[in-house]
Image (cartoon, rainbow, N blue to C red):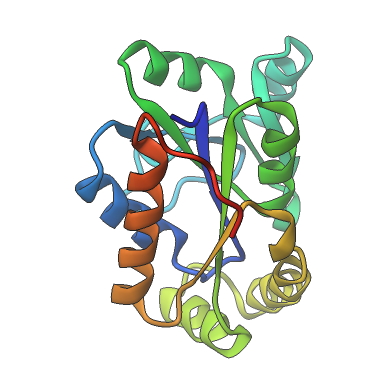
Length: 192
């Protein structure tokens, strides 16, 4: 079984939707809760969507080595995965699943033996449509995210597996089949 599953891809690729579907279909997987310095959005709760930290607290935890990975992302907000989240999930006998941006995903891929990385891809026009429908970012932030998405899509080949999410049902089926094969004790980890 993988030490950790990492799902990555550009904003608007549908990572969150695919992960929710995956967790419903494959037992033994638990999603880590990332830490962030961004403000809470309406309806979000500390410890559910994210661990919401101040910049000062975040940097103190970085200095103490409490993060597996961390990055500064769009608009200067910091995001990271606390090592304690992986420990908590592993103690429950589950495989941690991390939803990360590409830079953090590559850090985990190269720094955690047994990590399996999955890149979720979609056409740029589809990414832009989804970001606009989500309506959680300003027009300027959407433009920044689209430009970043173009760069991230060029990195897809650096990950163990790539799943196209232009058709949600098909993407869910492919991701579910892939992860089930990885969770089988005798599974080999084929490259895409």
